[in-house]
Length: 217
Image (cartoon, rainbow, N blue to C red; front, top):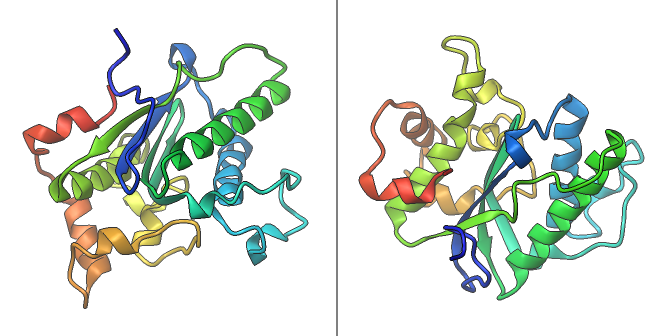
């Protein structure tokens, strides 16, 4: 029987919570450079090839052949944790998600194995993907993703201080053109979306019962 949430095909126009962890729950981001490298791959695959941010000679990874994934998937939220990652993605075309995730996993695994002189798989099998079917699930998954670093921060440390999450984009503290905040903000006030979203993410409450199946196993 296939593992739960391991999907072989994706709905065109569907929203997915994507997640994976290191094999045997090992750390997949031992250093700051590793986090930055994973984020660079996200940026490289999600921005148009001609985008100015891809022309910086100081980037840590040489530019490779563009995949034009920006026309196939949109990234709405992300969070990188020491031994796993979360992505909230809109799949624009039938095989867009598959192409994007294969490139991301292959590129980062190759970088990681070269850097740490290791062989074998880095991730615990294929990434997991779960289809989001209702508006309430959509906004709560974004909240769950952005709340993930809470356990890593000092007591009462602000969530927006965590550097490897898209949450600062939602508070207007950072802009990454490869992160689309518009679709989630559409569920909040047009006048004060950032403030309302901050209250929603940071308030303490239990998740609705039908959200559990969408979260990390």
